[in-house]
Length: 124
Image 1 (cartoon, rainbow, N blue to C red):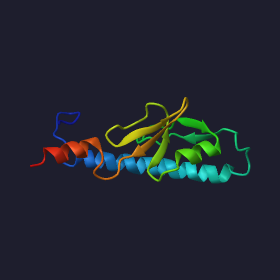
Image 2 (tube, rainbow, N blue to C red):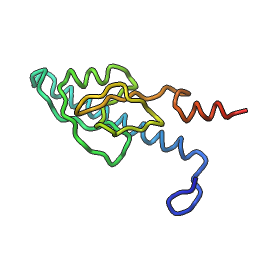
Image 3 (tube, rainbow, N blue to C red):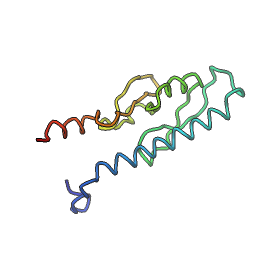
Image 4 (cartoon, rainbow, N blue to C red):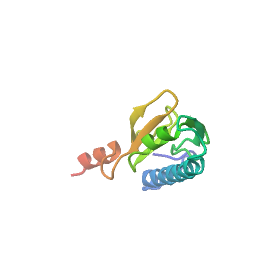
């Protein structure tokens, strides 16, 4: 695959892109965890507060308004993230919950992603 300017991409481009997305998502999730800790006890359990979308796009700063039980439910698994609807990377994650204002995605475990499965089946 060629890059934007017609230059070939490095052979590990997909791995580096996925790693960058994982770092962005982890940073956004950590931010939301700090926000939740700050707000917990100061707001009613059903009061919606702003959190950031935890998608892998480094340029996404979209807000999500969730109640603390909703963010807790979204983060029920360590590989789960809360994102705006359609803010997904299907080659890295699958949608596990769809709500009107937010979706919950779960990162594939190593070796589970569709791209890895395809590469494994193509290997001799």
